[in-house]
Amino acid sequence: MPTDRVTVSLDEETKETLESLTDRTGESQSQLIREAIAFYAANFDSAHASDSDHLQTYYEMLSTGEHVLLDIDLLHALLSQFPDSDERDEEVLEMIDQVAQYHAQEYAERFDSLEDVLEWLSLCGFLTVRRDEKGSFHVVFPSESVRWLMIRFIRGSITDLPFEIEIEESVSKVLLKERQP
Image (cartoon, rainbow, N blue to C red; front, side, top):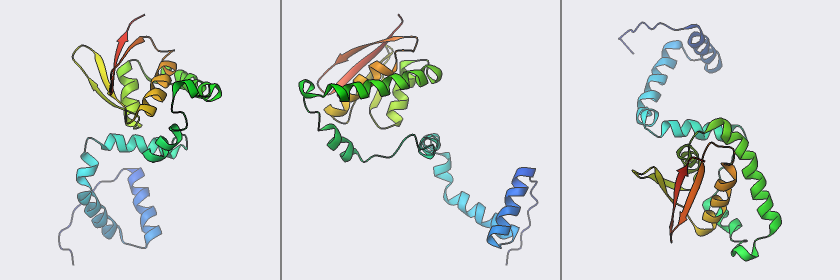
């Protein structure tokens, strides 16, 4: 049986939450608080890791139904249907451009820099980005097919932002530089 007592001050919202949980579980307030502390202690590292902001963003993205988790192999299988730039269907390219144009409106309200856009796309899993000291970005894509798709998407999705980009493609990386118009 617990012997130590702790006095806790609760704001109204927390008090209502605790009361709701006691009603739902049938547990005492003391038991729920003990369980909450144990849960917090077990998940402390995750709650305070630098990725916790990313986890919150993932949750927000997925909970709206606007984004989905997609197995990378499935993405590659879909993109393999467009192996050569000469064989890419014009209708498919128009759809990609339409998606990019839609995102251009959203990005104009959310982002101010190429770095912001690349960080977002990195969070989405489309690329890995490293900033160099000259203000340019080394970007690595998981495959050539993702590379052509995302370069096309990036070009189309930044049209309403207050900068232009310069793209230098290498064998496995792309160097992106932000330029003021």
